[in-house]
Amino acid sequence: MIQIEQIRKSFGKLEVLRGLDLTINPHEITAVLGPNGAGKTTLIKSLLGLVKPDSGVITINGKRINGDASYRSGIGYMPQNARYPDNLTVQEIIDMVRDVRGNPEDTDEELFHAFNLKTELGKKFKTLSGGNRQKVSAVLAFLFRPPVVFLDEPSAGLDPVSSSCLKDKIAREREAGKTIILTSHIMSEIQELADKVVYILDGVIHFEMTVNELLETTGERTLERAIARKMKGAA
Amino acid sequence: MKTNTLKLIKYQLRDVMRSRWGLFYLAFFILITDALFRFGGSGDRVILSLMNVVLLVIPLVSIMLGTMYVYNSREYTELMLSQPVKRGEMFSALFAGLMLPLSATVAVGIALPFIWNGVLFTHLAALGYLIGTAIILTTIFSALAFMIALLTEDKTKGLGLAVVMWLFFAVIYDGLILVVIYMFSDYPLQQPVLIMSMLNPLDLARIALLIEFEASTLMGFTGALFQRFLGSTGGLLTITGVLLMWIALPLSWGARRFVTKDF
Image (cartoon, rainbow over all chains, first blue to last red; front, side):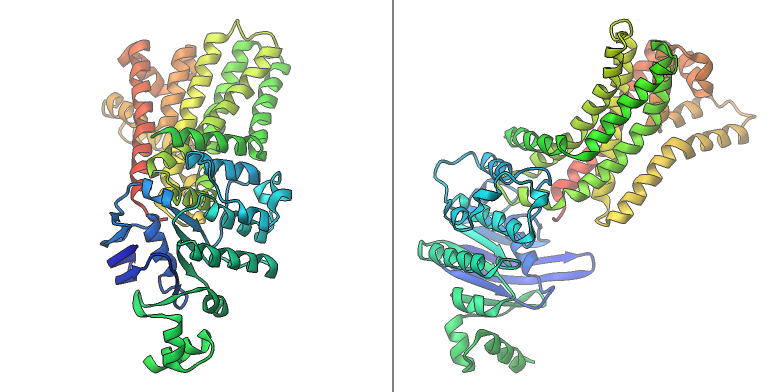
């Protein structure tokens, strides 16, 4: 379980998070939505300790985040755009992360095979296409079987086949009891995957509902319409 | 758990060894040193000429490449910090990943031509001294590069600042000292000028090299002052101490900033 209490963060004069409270249930897929610049990435980066909130408390599985690095061994992260050292091969990048994680024996190579990355192993990172870079970072997010996974725009730049591979994987991991946090601009993807939608607006949670609740209360058939209606009602 | 630092350095070194700038930098020093030999220099004269190259080129390359390196490593840094890697470990790895290959490149690039010209052992002490100074300068200007890149998120601004800082230490500062000497020529200036040159790592390195090579005619005002006030050994010890401060101060500032900043 991830608990976020009264998180505040400003960058200079810009107040990005304004006392945000959120509880992320375990074994669920939570989609974090919101307009551009609403604070989605800042929220995820705060959970990773990359951004240090000005105030507020974050606890992950009962442990408060306070600059210690070890809790991150339980988290997999797929960023919006990943860049590793240009001249390292895919194999070396995987080895590097594996090394830093203490070379666990039991790794999850399902995605690696599903994406057919074997042919890319010897290629340098700088020669990889954007899609293949995304694939490498998706593989790394799941490789160490972390109980918590953050995916920031996971299917951006992926071809339809790979994208559906990844979606299948996300759904399977949810069944296996993982806690997953997802951001995406593709509403159909979220409708398909997510249990719960959290909508951030102006640095606070505007609403928080299960996908079904959202569809039922608005009477719309698609998530996109439902959110549009809900936002119009609010305005 | 400093072991993460070592693990990361291992991979970063592999990355650097395949990069083009490393090769260029190596080729540059080999070519310059070898050319100096070819144009009729004896080992001593080559070392003296190299001194000027070292004092000019190393700060420039270290600060420019270093600043660029930190900016270009941003996403990589972010990714590794989302792994169970401490910020301090990452900072050490990043710094070592810049400073080690730069230093090794200079050392190898200068030493190789001495080896194949067969004068390595006759000039071992002077050469070691030159390379040592080169490595200290590399470290100082790498540390300053980290400081600049952590000061501003804006890459263009950072690179501009790096150029300005190099210009300041390499060119402008000496001008300032001259202006001071000229303006206050009626006063006893030894001590103020001595202190002023302490504040410029490049001046210090130059003086250290000149004292060691006993090229007192080239030493200029501040060099002569150092020798007179502190004697050769005392002068060198003072200079080394201050040079180490020039590494420690920007680096500890950078490390503190790196640990507290947002990525």
